[in-house]
Image (cartoon, rainbow, N blue to C red; front, side, top):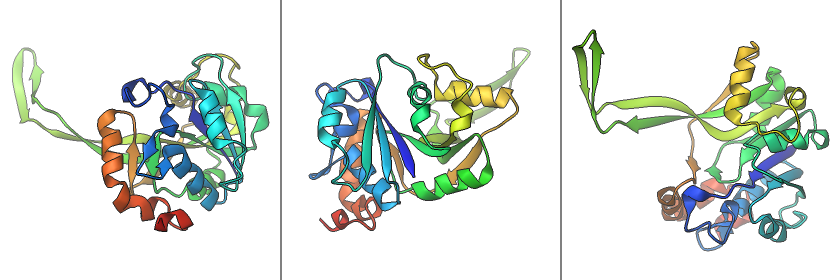
Length: 242
């Protein structure tokens, strides 16, 4: 089982934490980095190969992760020469990938079953499977509905429910073959293109723990919660009892 971890972004929204460290290497708790947790989880789930797509401060990621032997996985690397979006680097290395594989962002903390997601993707035959999560967004304003210049409805500070992408995907190699290597390709572009072609992605709905560490307040929350969540995030690993 093969996973591709996107670890090449500059982490601009997470500054100043990412001024000197790539985002996957920022520490969580006293003993771990985000990447350490993710690699431990993948190994526990039965993944034996991991490709790290690196860019900004990539040599630090390479020095930290090495060949992956301390997690029990084989790690190789893909160096991005320019910003190619989420899926562009995967297109570049498609010849090195199996028929179905996992793709995930390198800044995600979750207790999702990576193996089950990939297994469901294989069974479905879908071009892409997207892990989704229910998120509630608080609108801090009174919301008006108008028609022909007349207010016809009003809701004070409504809460809106959305299903959002978790940044974890099951992907088929064949899906990426039509795209040109070396050109940017975002996850959004891929989804819209698949919809336009009449081959929609599948959903893997998840309701456990998920945190996308994109901003300083997300990072602070991850550290505040980690002692309570360590056994959940690292279940089955000796690290969970440290």
